[in-house]
Image (cartoon, rainbow, N blue to C red; front, top):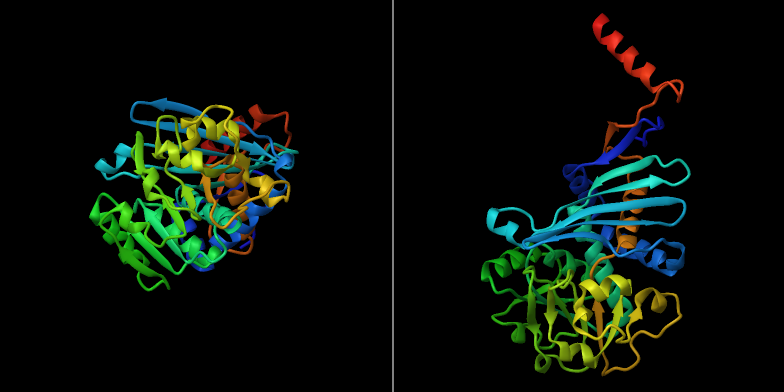
Length: 353
């Protein structure tokens, strides 16, 4: 099956088809591919329009739009974050996205992005760790064992060579769920009773919790020298996971400072506290890890370029597959000036039928 040639039809990737595509390619393989395409787009970071995501906050969550363009393609993601949803049996994060052609403005792809966001978030974490973590890192602590945990573990395995994952969550059932899902996937899994136990021997520490609050998942005395911290859970105003003193000891790397200073761990710091943009490290313009005993911190909040990369990769991956549906969503009159006539002729055809 090839992608539709008529401009009126737009390929749509449903949740079911996204799962089929990912499983057909392989979970680890597609995260390796996503890490590669995201890294390639970080190398050309100046080509992109950039703006902090447009967020509508409430006491119980946030709804956001995340747009960007490289001049040839335009992409955006709609995404929410509602920690309380889990108590109702709902996802805390759901999303969909659109990729469009800039020269015509026509959409090229509409896709679910709940699964795709989990994949691209993990791929971005692993890409950053490849540049910032200790070279011999083989053990990761995963603190917060919710919906993102397995993706993070497998991305770190596929991209960085992690062999052991030490799990901790305040809800032991989440840890058991994560351990069961990762069983048989080539990782040594250790279930821990505390965050302090989980980080013992870990060179990479990933924090990914859901509560929308200032929290101290890691205190300063828990973090020794030479580790890489992958801080995923602090991703909106008023939501952090790390004690401020850890930040003061670390080399901090971010996606887009105007967004991260509002939403990330560094919202705890002075507005002029120095940070390094990750794209500059990848492009060879700034140093990454500079010493074996340095603490590096990737203050990850998620940025639109990562979603753009993921959407473009999925669009290319659809070629020659059946993992999409055609949506008839663009009016396509024979005469572009005669939209009204097309409407009337459709009515006449209905009467004849």
